[in-house]
Image (cartoon, rainbow, N blue to C red; front, top):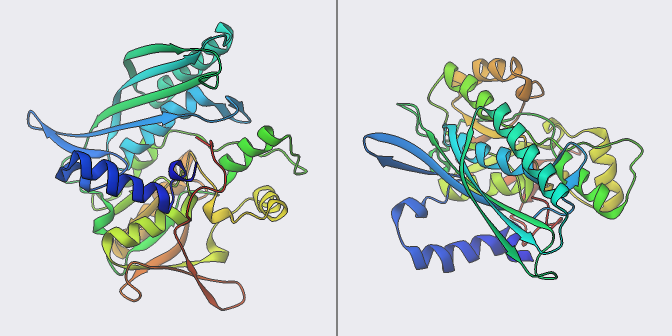
Length: 329
């Protein structure tokens, strides 16, 4: 299970098994979506599979999660998603009304994101060989001219911005999976981010890095960016927005909110001369109303993320081995 958690084990599996087997420069970039040129157009192309348990959770379900997840992966290259494919793997015996609810949720999410589900596939496996419904989505979108967003572009001096409060998705899924109550309802943050990214690019096309911190949370995304760029990252823990309900749940469960999955948030590395304008544009968009500056990119401790604690000290933020909360997306 650790190999599917988005942490160090996932990275080793991807780098040493899959990337080695497929061997090409496009894949070697290891970004949320691949930037490719085809017929004179620059496209972003991404694929993802969803095995979240349970299928329905506060604020969403596997259907809208699948649409938003792929739309967001494309947005992390600066692209506005245009077309999606979807493939359903159904377990024998799953109720058709359940499948229908998932499909309806996907259709509504696609409409909200302004993307067309253009093709798909369905397979059925024997009872006991699945978990109700698994969904795969792939997507393509156009990357605007002059946009070059990738983790290797992180530069000392960049301002690190997160688009809103973190950790809600992971806690929302866990609460219904385990039947836990935390005093107040925690609702998943699943949402499409294409519009928010478009607003940021209107301010400047020179965004250096965008990443949606899903599996492994914000900490994993920052560690991956630091490693890819060879720069250091300093984060102020008190500046990271964490909802009280999420903080309380994580305290009860012994989890670190920095490592809890999100499905409607992004982290951006922005050149300092554009940071104020980009932050203002984010605040003006519904998906960025809670955006906050949480740190900077530095030349010290290359490839390492360091957090400044509330006690005035510092701690190293490591890449997790696996995932605190498996089957979260």
